[in-house]
Length: 263
View 1 (cartoon, helix red, strand yellow):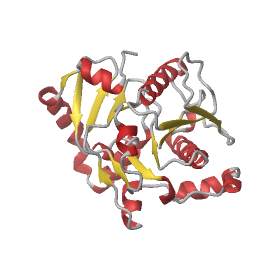
View 2 (cartoon, rainbow, N blue to C red):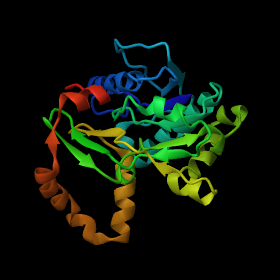
View 3 (cartoon, rainbow, N blue to C red):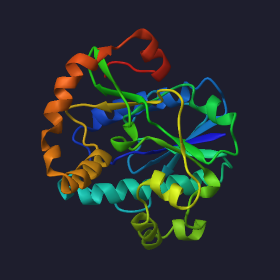
């Protein structure tokens, strides 16, 4: 069974709570539209959105550490996300999944994931190479490879391979912060431990962006790459030019597979 872990930002950390909630609801609909019933969802939150969608496979877990506010900047936001991820993975452990996957609360997933994972219960896991980038409201979508370099919703890992705190440690904020310090590039961590992940054989994620989105994973990776190569300052111009020629219409089949809708 595959468990999806969704860290949801707090109301205080959101530029628009209504918009955040709508993207989150779309994310949940996307996850719960799996072609196989062998999945569950764990949402870790400070503020539970007032959304209409519900599903018996969804569990909500209240975060027990202080929520950052928007004015705090990226650092506290990153820590908050990682603490929620660790909390969600610890809760997921109780559900006895074969694998877990962390999904940002504004991205969409392929409905084929749970069915695919159920066929390989002993696999180390996978990472998303091929997927899509999408700006909310657009009529076009951009096929993207190496999506794992940009998006935080791109790894599926066998549950027993995670280095997680005990249940007692998970209830202690200081212990969570200690594990947060070890929370980095999951693909590299698993490779270093001798458990390499494989690329998923089909496009698996739609990385959704918008004028209101503040994607922390992207900021972290871009900052690291810029320090290594300042010339990448020109890459947004290159990407914008490529999108004109590479993007494709947002088709009904893509919307159906990833359960997308205009927000």
